[in-house]
Length: 93
Image (cartoon, rainbow, N blue to C red; front, top):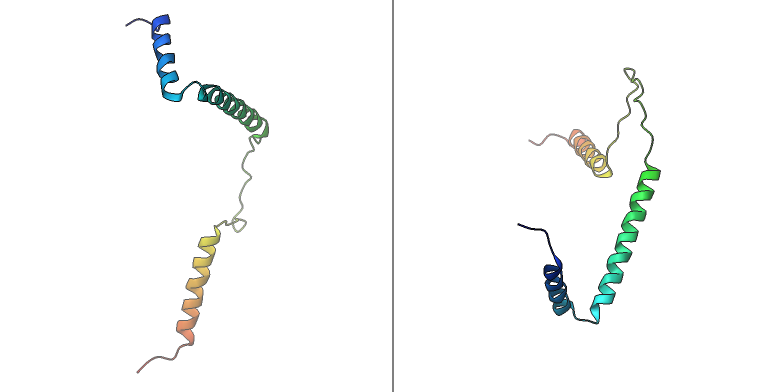
């Protein structure tokens, strides 16, 4: 298997021309170029905004912080309300 030569490139370009048409090729090339620029810009900004590596602080017993999502908090509160409602309800006979 050899590398791609001039005849193969010409065939590929002709197929692309037939698929997209001559009026859409400049628009397609422009949009690919803009997307490439935007991607490179995003990668550069991401590299600049990367936070420095921070060593974890020592955690003392009783000094732990707990994080949860809003859905987890809502579920926990709903369970507590149900438990309190069961305590307040007199037993059925």
